[in-house]
Length: 339
Image (cartoon, rainbow, N blue to C red; front, side, top):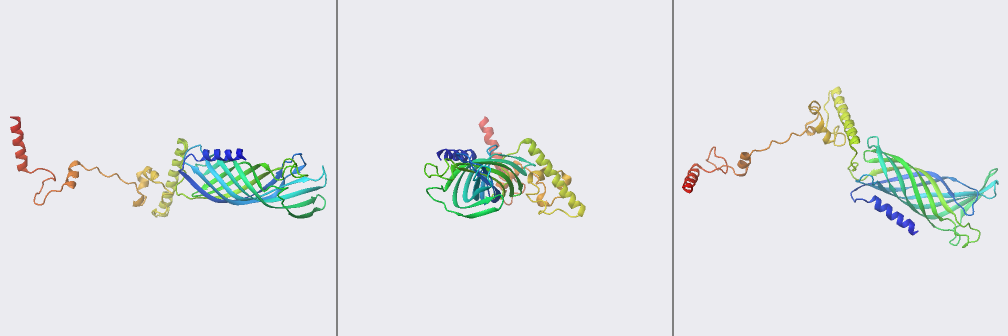
């Protein structure tokens, strides 16, 4: 258990390189199967048809190559099956309802001009087994016995832990993200207590799960991706935005309308690209979106006039400038000093 705790702390330190992060919250749902690894070994198989679902949270740091941290709180269906006799006709099946808390580090890279992510999840999980059901199944007659499984403290365990990992693709649509992932849960804890503690139990019985899921996320902050793209990606992104701006303006010219501020908002046409547009395209933009002309620098005389306005009744005199009499007295005093 201490090894799992240390590993989870390492995952947090790797992901939390900076507090300046983007926060996502979402929901996820999936389907998969479960199995068990028994010692001594039995002829086991995968119990399919197990569902999962819950809420998910993750944040991305602004630093490159650090990745993200993701935490899920979800319901997870677990289970296993094994043949009662070697190459026999009947098998024993169990399904378990559990709550799980996976904590994962998510390295990733972008594609499709930063509209898509390929990611890998690596981490640990903690689970709690709530209740269980069992059934016996024959290849000839199907299910012939079933019912609730009574979990006993002396025979069964309630808590589980292990490693988890997976990979997937996500697509970014403004502040939304749609993710598809395949994940594998590798158990370290036993679902049944050791055979030395309860007679008839196997020595080891960890559970494994395989799951495919789909998730919807919403970005809480308005800012886009904070990590700086490479020079090649930044150039391709700028070229794509320029082509998009030109298509918008050509569309307006075709219909004989002028573009409104709603058509060229900050999201659709960034300010940096508005400054880069040629003058022919700039004239098509509304006044509020046109390139801002730099202010003309004021001369020292204009600044002086603003700070020291000329007194009334002194036409043509610059503010702060001495009068004629004051100028003559200054010149006389300078001649005296030279003598």
